[in-house]
Image 1 (cartoon, rainbow, N blue to C red):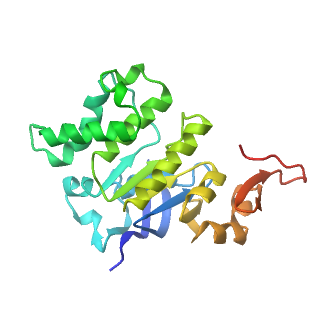
Image 2: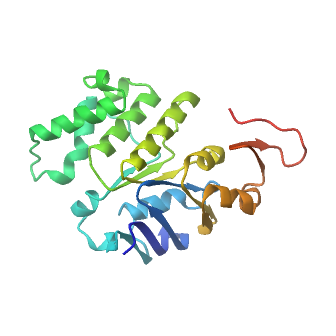
Image 3: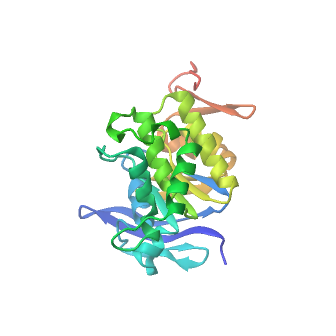
Length: 261
């Protein structure tokens, strides 16, 4: 039995257009899997399929050998949490929004228990925003809002966390802190799948790396093997160099380099 997330031959369409073509990859537990690729290559659609928002036309998604697509949506939501790239900003208190992450564990109408409120407090503390709990989400900065939504994923208490470009709206220091948090979550036993637009961050954060292009997986391997293959230069038309354990970009048309911050 495979321990972790296994995507097997997924094809999917969005707005009647074929977006994913026979996509397969594995994302282990206790690890960070980074998905990279040019804009429009299907990364976000892939996460939406795994999270059951979009139904695939072909293929299956397994977690620890169990088909996620065969579960009820409630049971699936107990296994997989999804942070989309863009969300509506709500005029709701921070603690109330984070509490929505407990929805798979409540009946209808929702009746929250004391333990649900405790989990919300713990998640807010983990993200360093416990002092914002009584503020409106709409009053927060972009980075603070991102932390609120991540806290909402955490209280869902799932085995798998899907993050679609979670560093959006964060300054560079907070980006690194968030990626460090993703690595900590993986070490705690989570399967973290994260779409990143910054290839350097993906190379330096991930345990496993998936490269997509035009709706297909063109390579899946360790970051070092992906780098050594040269596939990133082909897909992104840029040069990536490595010194010691650090990577940096350089222009592909000349030898003048510019270092990643």
